Length: 116
Image (cartoon, rainbow, N blue to C red; front, side, top):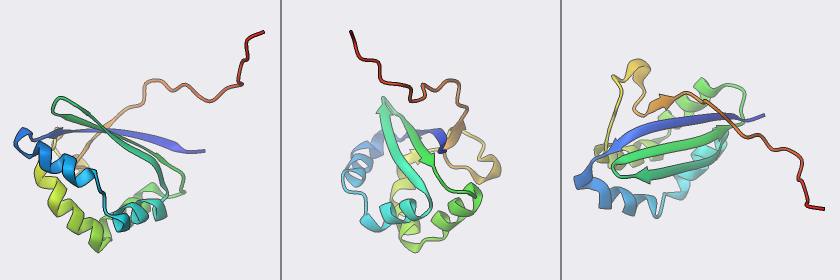
């Protein structure tokens, strides 16, 4: 069963167009690294100057897979472009750039109900 992760960060207004341009064509190598690290359904939403990220993790060792992502040279190059577009909302406890969010509620898949 997948673990769900939500996170939040501020988008710097003066870097908005740059960030959106980068994410209109995320590098295939970066996407492949995420897939190999057991990340699924990664989505980033934008509201005003806030970015909300969501992904599902299907692996066995989240910390090890996160370390694998961080060690990837292409991902490091990607972050050198995207990080200046962002402003962390947290004190970076534990090295986290994005601020983790606690899950409050989840509608799990249930039976499909067809009308009579």
